[in-house]
Amino acid sequence: MSVNNSLHLAPMLALGDDKQKNEFITPYTTSDKIGCFALSEPGNGSDAGVTFTTASYKGDHYLLNGTKASITNAFEGIDGFSLGKKEDKLDIRGSSTCQLIFEDYIISKENILGQPVYGFKIAMKILDAGRIGIASQALCTLETCPQNVIIETPKLLKIIKTLQKYNA
Ligand SMILES: Cc1cc2nc3c(=O)[nH]c(=O)nc-3n(C[C@H](O)[C@H](O)[C@H](O)COP(=O)(O)OP(=O)(O)OC[C@H]3O[C@@H](n4cnc5c(N)ncnc54)[C@H](O)[C@@H]3O)c2cc1C
Image (cartoon, rainbow, N blue to C red):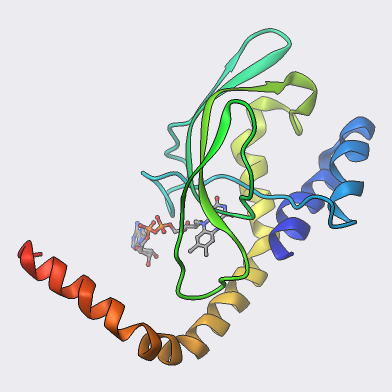
């Protein structure tokens, strides 16, 4: 819910035009739909500015190509957009965290939030609102970590053995 509220609804309220607000707010407050925010990629994380996904301008729409990684609330694909690997997480298992794969995915020009040139700036501003939530999640994870490590010990030993096999 934290991602839906702070990373999807909040920017929609702040920057969306009337049409965007109609389409992208109400269904996300009635649990018909759940919002996500896709910035991270397989080759980036902390250094979010180094993105490889492209949005090519085609007049009335953009074509999106690339892969996003570790995205919360990723549930189903549609034309031009499929789900990749789902993370088997140690914690926060109530939310789905997946790769999103875009292959010539069409986004209408009308769905751009704010002005395209400010995309990265807007993304960074949106993340500011989520920091408190993420920090409290991290604290809870840390609190339950010893329990989870005990439960997961056989799995961890298997990973260590595999790494040893490759001298890693
Ligand atoms: C449960 C979960 C849900 C997520 N949901 C989303 C989502 O909805 N949308 C989304 O876009 N992303 C999401 N992410 C991805 C998240 O944003 C990244 O995991 C995060 O940005 C860190 O990137 P990374 O995992 O690649 O780690 P890295 O960037 O590889 O960092 C690994 C470690 O190195 C440290 N480090 C990195 N760079 C430096 C440096 N220059 N100097 C010193 N230390 C450094 C980091 O502090 C960290 O401890 C999610 C991740 C998780 C675990």
